Length: 112
Length: 111
Picture (cartoon, rainbow over the protein chains, first blue to last red):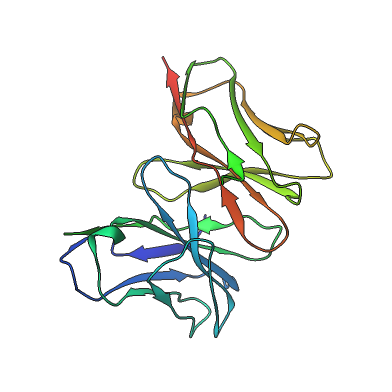
């Protein structure tokens, strides 16, 4: 069973607030990913990391930022939340290219 | 421009019958394909994968078929069970550690 955790599971917040979505994995995976998904749509990669101190932007432009100071931790931050940021955010990790990605349960963010 | 297309948003299948989910792709550089299953309020879970050097991969009730010339893959579930009701995502990768997902197909297994 995959051990990847996301908190909070649900977040409702007002416009302009700073938020951090937490993601942690206990599998020792070097590669970690953040996806954004709207209902009925595909998962879009917004950030990824190949290891500590490595972060890259994904294919979908996002105003969020990420950090990777520890192997197990890959938080995502929005400095000033807006209603357009309302979405589900999914974190994933993998061991290597030919290994599947393990997903966390997701954070459903609503910005009012 | 969608590189991975799942043209059926939903599919209903009788319990015990075969479920066939289809997926088309446009990028000929894709060399690894995956299927994920997602229940509501949960993250996707990996189901089965196939490398481009194969045309079939089987794992229990799940079989994935790859037709490279047609840029098409399909997932067969036999026999379908109530617990198979979920959204199924087709995904593909081109060797750069990034996975491109389709929009998903919602599978309903009818009693």
